Length: 112
Image 1 (spheres, rainbow, N blue to C red):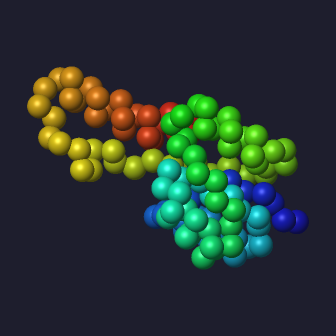
Image 2 (image 1 turned 90 degrees about the vertical axis):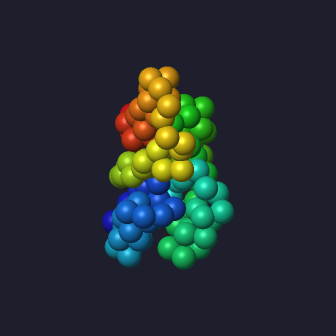
Image 3 (image 1 turned 180 degrees about the vertical axis):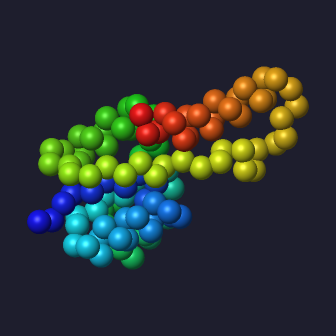
């Protein structure tokens, strides 16, 4: 039985490895991510379907659901990461709060 699998954050890192394992098992795999160019390259390498989507944006997630349609069997939420990389050092409480919110959005809200 072939399953339809969605891997958020499937363009790189652990998400890419997870998508590759499902694809190797013969499943139909959809990968998402924010970097459309990286996503397209990974999709070609894995023979997966790429759909650019920022999982922290409810509008984009609704559009993703519409594109995928019914019949999704597996969801693997791998989107996320440390949003502090490349961010200037926090100068005060406002910066700290902004940094925490960005990380919560990327690593918690994206899965919700």
